[in-house]
Image (tube, rainbow, N blue to C red; front, side, top):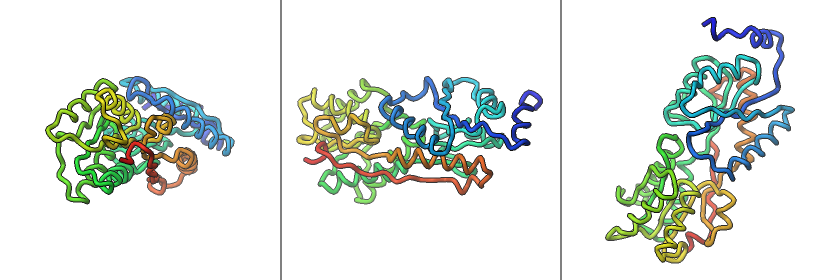
Length: 295
């Protein structure tokens, strides 16, 4: 439409000029940001941008705001050459809009629509499969799962990995052991309380994030149960606090250096006109075994 027409941006493209700036678009007021991860990850992105003589713009989107106008202004106005879209949801209207408008972007994380756009994502299902298998192979059969909001695609993949591991060993799926929509410490504490009150409590817990695992660790200790001795506990992400917890937390590590560089290279490929389907990358995580699961 006429309202979406930005001659300055068109002129820039016709002249082959670029801003040499890319935007990292993250949502404000949506999922709580893990400050430790965010700082480290932005540092990795900035370093990768510098290697390609690019500047990095961190652009916040308001949760529930007018993302169409915001994203269009950012890209069509010539302010940036492309964007990295973070905080992707299972059903993400922003991804659909960017695809329909033909705007250059790479998603950090998949959605339920994984056909015609570039993405870089951690194989979260493989991560929780590995963490749950680790517990099963140590003899645990009653394994609980603590998950975060299933609005986000990665949360569903992490639950899927847990379920897959139980199926591999023909373990029954007990709904009483699954809390798949936790947002904060108080909810996690209540989930742990309910798990401990079961006639047959779990001998192990795997959590979809390290913060959930650390909240659970405190709740268990308050109940007089020592993780790593009385119950096994595993997290996901390997945030800095994980190694310094007592006991140190077994977790699944995201290779942020690899992911950050891959996001930048993938976006540059999209900007250069390469097929988006050639730029879909699933990065493998690593299980880091520490004291919390070594009972």
